[in-house]
Length: 280
View 1: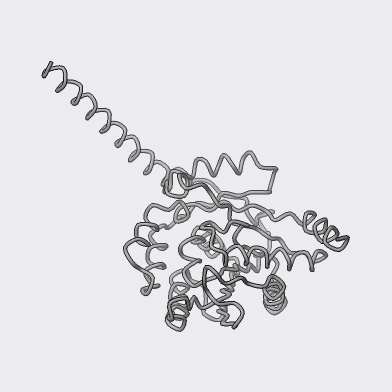
View 2: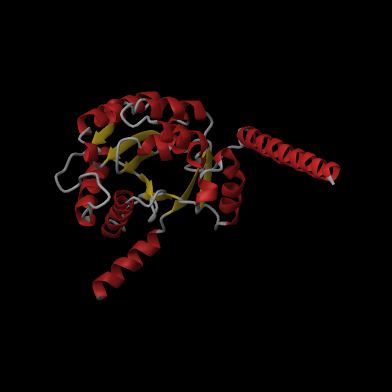
């Protein structure tokens, strides 16, 4: 009986080791699988014009925690990236510090300081209980789009990755802007939120993200793999006031460090939604 128990434990141990080895193999295989690919995002030919892109986020560190694959993709391919951060993240009284940390993180991402704008509006203060006015957000975004000659806008989807109300309000602010500017030639893309298992699967989520993009209507979704994940760690570490142990774990295991899936915010949907609102 004792012999059978030891044999069972030995087999169980071997199975766990094999499972762990398989996960490690899949993790590293995912890291290298993407690099030969050339995503078609914002590309319509060899001589396509470079885009003037605006990344709209809610707080300093959003760009490093969630959008680093997108930022790396755009900057490495010569697109002109601007970042609009709609608050200084002053929930803990560290707004001025966090603003400077964002500028330092953008240096790591090779985004010039003059192309980074951080708002500190009294009605757009960081906090889970702070509701942001979508019309106000729309107005601020429109001003930035016109001032910078923006033709591509990128932001959160309607869940905002973490469910933070400020992230979600930014999304709806962009949607409100699009409803009011439906005739303008502006592409809009949202970062797809995933379930908790995918969210903490690291680079392994690349395979699911690729499948999602492939199954989406042509051109409506793109999977962007981070070609330099180490830069994401360096950028996030510039947010020293936020660089605590659980955020270090997040950046290590979050799929958003390694891959972004961007989905088109449909323009026709914006026009239809605007018409419905007017009828009501």
